[in-house]
Image (cartoon, rainbow, N blue to C red; front, side, top):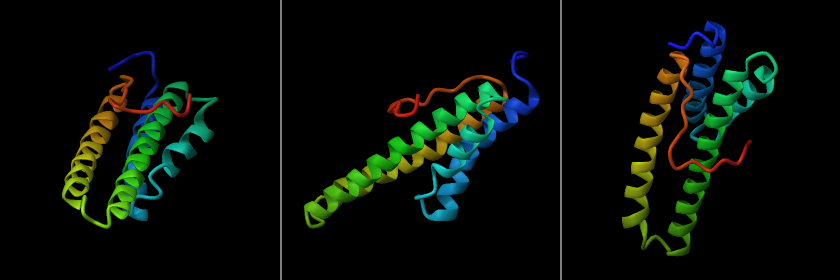
Length: 124
């Protein structure tokens, strides 16, 4: 556990990652960015570690949202012929998203900054 981050800072950082999960399950995937964005906007001044992790969670959520929209577009454009490819890819992305988000939440609760792999850095 890092001594440079307060307990409250670590809790908000963990909440930023877990709120992406909650947003996905409560809104069918479209609200995945709402929690991390809210934490980023509300805590960026008082809790820099939480804000950094909220940006990371937001970037990862937006990256996977873009990937999901692209997979849907490919499926529609191919009239469903490429579902053989897009469904397994979407399933793998979903599992990776779940696992990596849980890992990020655990690391944030320990006070360690987590960087998602294969993530577009859209929000800086």
